[in-house]
Image (cartoon, rainbow, N blue to C red):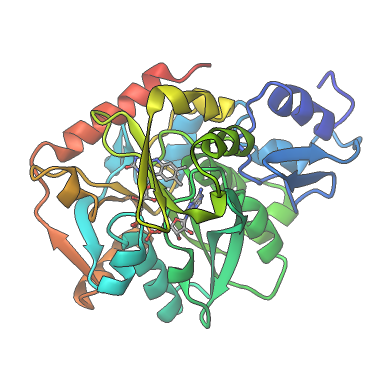
Length: 351
Ligand SMILES: Cc1cc2nc3c(=O)[nH]c(=O)nc-3n(C[C@H](O)[C@H](O)[C@H](O)COP(=O)(O)OP(=O)(O)OC[C@H]3O[C@@H](n4cnc5c(N)ncnc54)[C@H](O)[C@@H]3O)c2cc1C
């Protein structure tokens, strides 16, 4: 390593190179990094050449094909979307969950079930400290996961919250994460660093969100401030299927502002351009929006779900047997189309 220590190495090769996704993996594992306003700040330098931060940063060189073979059943692995044990279209059976959710509420329903069943004692979800400023929040069995439903399209550094939580009495942690964060958690699982190992053993469930890209806070806030008087009036956002080519912004008075993707492209976090994982391949269960023959108005209240591990399969089976998720028939081409979209992200990712 030509740089003096691990922090300097990470600064040069990830932060200064605009490759940082703000996943938060280096934060709370090492005192030198803090997550602040959409950026990782290096507080001071360290002399260690084998820092844990280097072990787990998802943006440093990683043999992800090898990692996937280590962590998933070889027979399930597909080149386009990672491991697939099962593929479903689902939504939460509870109408209140569904109403408050981004799409079908599958994520919220599964997290709620995992907490109720004691599969996990705490979940890391995403909340907002101020409008468009997300952060990881810990929700235990007495909490309400539904309060943190919906997608926040500015990056939420949820792995920083995991690292903090893992040092408390929480013993079985469930995570909702974007693909880069699932990669960091996977790298933690194989890290030989004792502190990271101890933390990682507390991870019981990873629910990954499909993700095309996320926004930088400052750029998105500036753009939305041109369209809206009050950013706190935003109650949600969505990116409908590509043929619509818009970002929809929903406000408390019932208005929807549709902004062309051409206009919002400048707000995309530069690091997302080099990400090749659309479906959060390092998760137990991955969830995204659905595609249905009836069109987007129907599809938007459903999810496409990839089950990747035994842990994921058990949770889905339990949700089905308890009647907590509705399942509908998967249209024939859905998985093939998803694979195509995922492969496209892999092809266009800049290196
Ligand atoms: C940045 C981003 C980009 C996405 N891009 C796509 C895409 O291209 N295609 C697609 O099909 N789906 C995409 N999704 C996923 C989609 O928006 C929904 O999250 C998914 O369909 C699950 O819907 P749901 O109704 O089950 O979620 P809900 O039941 O509403 O639960 C959503 C959960 O995600 C957590 N969460 C919200 N924002 C974040 C965040 N930034 N990081 C980590 N956790 C978060 C919430 O706390 C909540 O627990 C994206 C999501 C994000 C956050």
